[in-house]
Length: 203
Image (spheres, one colour):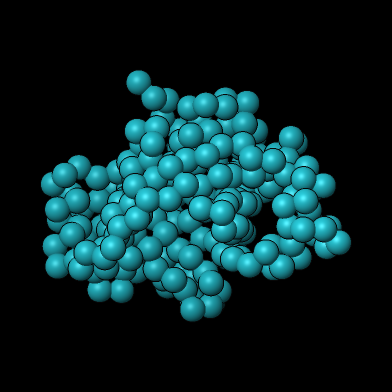
């Protein structure tokens, strides 16, 4: 699966405009726990390992440049055997034991209340995290890597048609890191995963 999404912070007026003609779907509440090593060898490569309500997922970047102004483009890996292979984890132990042997430990947990909608081909998620951060995501799936740019353009053209700013914006985990772990944040900026201009210090 190739997930392409763009994050926005929208006013109530902008949200109303986005949801014109959208079909409401069943919302949900979930808890994400993110993992990395002490030397941050995953997140400094823009690789994100999380457990969502006990089910592990891995996001691996497909963008080859460091330009985060457009959209987030990741390949999602959703089975433990595939994650084990991708991360070259030990195969002789259980998955949880393999994570520990590889030095991968939780570094944050975020509980999210999500409202979901469908507008045409676009999936819309409105997330409010337990630390007070709200973000809206507009998402499409690209059928293949060859169609990534075309899919990105569809999202950006749709957002621009509604008058939304398409500048960079933190996702929930990035905002959490910025607020709670400055050293981790600085490592991500130094690694080029994020530009420092993306980060808005909380008031």
